[in-house]
Length: 265
Image (tube, rainbow, N blue to C red; front, side):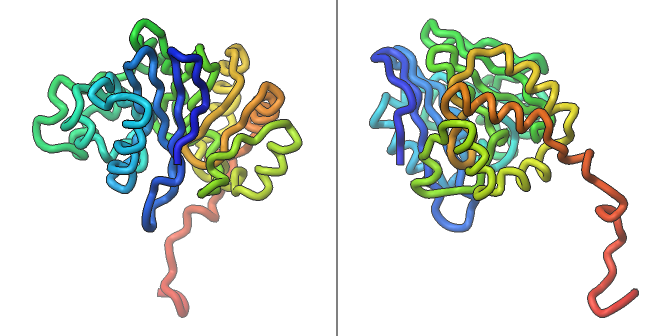
């Protein structure tokens, strides 16, 4: 399933949802096309590769893929790297911390000269004359974690931040309005996911402080539905800024030597 998020005739953003077959976690993939040149965001692994390749062909020629962006190193993010390097001339953008891990997904020598390490402060990436902004989201949830902000569509592609555990047609939905946002939180395991996967409130607050200064009209995560409209984005930021998670909620109960079932060792 694909959905055009933005199209002004020159610049286009496309979401692909529900491509995963089998037992793997559902994940969204994204394509930004500017004047016929493309950036593919978090393309996933073998469970999405052939479907994504076929879906992309509807919007532009895969031979014009300039970049594959990986927000971090997880298999559902970039395990299909070898396939994209094989059939295109694209370069892979990934945090400098993960550049030496990426070859484990690829044939020997395939990544040579094809990987761009994103510095800790992020970077600006030109796509056919239009700048895209790779912004830091460290420890949300990975070390060396990044997001892409598109200033044309005003979409923030937020990776695992904002993930909500819905699939099928629900993953293609855009949640609009503060009330709808909080209702969606209640049914989509957002709170539980973020408490477990985000590292702590300090980084939630630092990230939110940075993002409040940006002109964002739509937050689009890698899992589940998206959050559209300024009121929805504001509600998301207010919730995330105050979230206790990760190190905040760990206790000695989380670090106990396991006892065999049936009694003490």
